[in-house]
Structure formats: C-alpha cells, structure tokens
Length: 615
Image 1 (tube, rainbow, N blue to C red):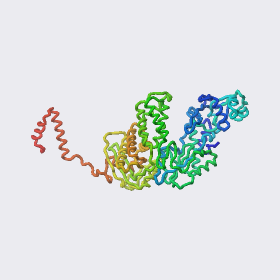
Image 2 (cartoon, helix red, strand yellow):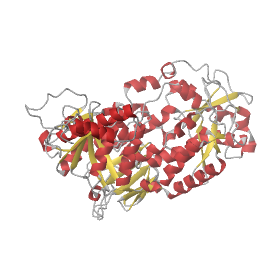
Image 3 (spheres, helix red, strand yellow):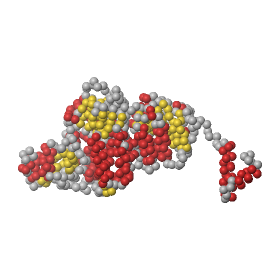
Image 4 (tube, rainbow, N blue to C red):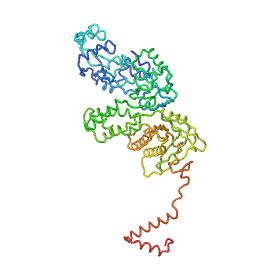
C-alpha cells in the first residue's frame, strides 16, 4: 500500500491521524454494527475472504462506527465494484477540503487546437487506485463494515478457494481473547474506502503530487476555474486516478508524452492499467468528454442517448423523486460545463432537487420540465470548436445609477489579449491601463495587477446611453455587459471566436464567468448575456477593471467626450421652436380643460386676439 500522508500538509496529517480531530463531536451517535442486506450473504462472505487476503480489510471484535456496502455495476463490463456507504460517517467528520487542481469539462474547453496544429492527447489510468492508499491505523476504527461470524469464514460451502482456517482468520484479527467459531468479527477498511468524503481529496492529492514529480508545474494544470495554459506548453488534466496530457506536437512525434509519469509510478509502486494507456492520439475520451480530430470537444454519444430517453420518460410520466431528477440534472450540468452559458437554463430545478425527502416520488412542475427540455434543445452548443481565435478587440463596460450605461473599446495585439485573459483566469486580479499624471489616482486593489500596454485615450466610446428606469446596481452592470456584447457581435466576423471582456464589478464578473446567477437582481441579466454569447458562438473570458481605470466610467455617467464617440457636444437643451411648441401644448390643454369642448376655434381666436406672432 501507498502512504498518502507523505504528500499532505501537516494540518491535514494532524486531522487524519486522530479520531478526535477527524470527528469533533465523536462517533458515539454512529452505528457500531450493521448487517449486510445488499445481496446474497454467501457472496459477501467470499468478498471478505478476498479482501482479507489482499490486505484491503482486517478484522476486529469492535469498531467505533460501521456502514453497509452496496454493489455498483461497471459500465464497460459485466463486473461490479463494491462501495462503502459512508454517508453518515462523512456527515459526522470534518468537511473535507476541495481537491487541489481538479479538472472538469470547462477547463478542457479552454484548450486550443487547429487543423495545422491539432491537439494530441496521452493518458494514464491507475488501477484500483483507492485500494492502494492505506488508512492510518489511528482512525481505522471509524471504517467498519457489516459484521459476520467466524464460522461463516470457515464454512466449506464457500469452496476451496475461499474457505479459511481458524488460524488464518486469527492472523487478520487483533483481539484480547482468542477467536472461536462463534465469535463475531467486524471487517474494517485498511485502505481509503470509496464512499467516504475525504477519500477523493486524498487520492486526488496523491496523484497531483505524482504529476508534479513528473515535471509539470502548477501553471500547466487544467483546473475547474478554467486556467488557460499557453498554447505551446503541454497541459495536464488530473481527475483522481486519471491523468491526461494535451499538447500540440507534430504527427511524427513518437516519444510518449507521459514517460516521466510512468517512471514515477514505477518508483512509487503505483499500479497502472496499461490496457487503458494511449499516446499522442487525436481522438479520445477524457472526463466523460470526447476529443475528436484534435480540434473538437463533444459529449459521449451514449450519454446523449441516456439523457434523451430520460427526458422523454420524464415528460411522459411527469413524476420523479429529487434523487432521480438529481442524477439527470447532474449529467446535464456536467455537459453544460463545455459551454457555461447553458447553465442559465436551469433555476427552479435546483429547488426541486434539494427538496426532502429525497426518495419520495412527486409531481414535476411544468416549469422544471421546461428548463430541462430547453437545456436539451440547446445540446448543439455542447460541441466546442477548439480552433476559435482570440479577437484583438478589448471592450470594457460600466454602469452608473446616476445616468446609465457606457462602453469603450480599443484594439490590442494578440499576445497582449491572451496574456490578460490568462491573468484573469488564474484567480483574484485587476486589470490596469498605462497610467499618466493626468489620470485619476489608482486605488489599491487585492489580487494580481496586470497592466495593459495601452492608455485611456486609446479607447473610443462606443455608446453612452441613459437608463430608462431605476434598477439594482448589479442589474445595471449585467445590462451594460449585454449591450457591449451585442455591439461586438454586430459584425459576423467576430462570431465563433474568443473574447476578453472587462467589467468593473467583481460579483458580476464571477456571475457572468460562471454562466448563471441565483440572485434575483442579476439572474435575468446574466441569462440575457448568456443568450447573446450562445447566439454569437463566442467564448468570453471576463476580467475586472476598477472604476478609476475603466475608460467606460465617464460614458456611464453621461460624459461622452472620449475619442470616437458620436455625441461629441453636450446637449444644448430645447430649441426656441421646441419652447414655443411646448407653450402652445400647455395652453391648449388648459383651454381644453376649461371649455370641455372639442372646438379648437376658441383656442385659436384667443391666440389671434392676443397678437401672438404665430397668428
């Protein structure tokens, strides 16, 4: 077995080597003995025999807590894997940390491959990875399994392959009293069980450490935050026991991209599945997503079939439990990560999935069903073109409650746009322009500062529009961003591309990047922006540009004097003719109210007798 504690931080090691630290409220409220009810008991006894001999479990007469197990069928074969049902134990333990540098389909969509330089993938898969990672002896008492009698392990009915002797059974058990055939023993996990909350974090952390040792830097990991890797550098996606390397290399390259990782596996003793390994292929499956010809990403055909059949059955019966609908929505959301704006299709559905009890079948409302059907009807956007080029346009928008909306734009070189988008994808950041003494003083901001090679005067004002009604500041910001996206996508040559777009509200930036918002003030605006990006088939990376730097700040306040704005002069107010017309309208309304008559002659006679010039 491998010791994963060697790659974890001291804080995590401290938690995972003490029951008191891992379970702050103790384990007395958890069951210490459970029975097997997931199938034939004879098969369970055979499973325990195999696991004892493979050092996956040992035996004790008592444990701190126990949980049942259940089988799960493998999709690629007629075999099954057993899963430890650790829901209650996970709830009693400290909340596990988020797995580091975790990949998902959204990260894969950041890759780029062209016809002349397609993307090639190489992959490795660890065999029964969880069963290779040992649990510290100090906390094994929390991972008990269904109990059994020693006599059941000695039963000749198991067959010669499985039947044990009393001496062999005793060798797997540490007990104060000698075991007898009537003794009750509890198998407990000696490796991290699938079904416990911390197991995925530990397995993923160990694999990330292996990849680091193979020579990959943190900047080369494709993560769920959508970090963009340089086109010319290899990128790696890690998902627990799967490692996939992506790089743009010539077809004549014969060297395996993951040779160094193979050597790390050999040194550490990590067992890998050689039959699942592949090198420098243009088409493969990674994270449940298919890479095709090195230039396209798309969902698996079998999953599309399952989704359509499930939606058809749901539309016919109009009934489902939250647990059943949650599995359907999970598959939908996973594919939506290929094109995040599609996440705006789902909203009321989340309330249904969170309802209790989770196993109770209930009526599915028409609103929830319409969201699912809408999402499925847009499945064409699950197909991602990796050859899309970056636009050299840099739009920036702002909104102000005192006036309305503003948008400015400039043109940068391609490398500057890609660099700014990379900085925005890494994490907390803010975008600055080249500063001069005439500009407003810069306020210190948190996060990495990236300064663009342009000044405020290089931007031209695209629009300065007064808001028609009062609204929440977040709603105004999303409206300004949507208007800016529409201006960029007016030209068809800007469609099917990648765009870097700056806003000056971090909450709105994150909502737009996520693809949806649950806040009532911004949900509709984010959905509107999502619809625009889907219509233009443009992948947008949003960045944060503070107000004192944002050249759209002045247009959003009604000051539209920047270069390129069509409104270069202030509004002089109503003309003399407008004043006279308005005066006539007022007098007409007053006389109409007094006379309560439809005869206009009274008005005109009065105007003529007064010697007005209009007479």
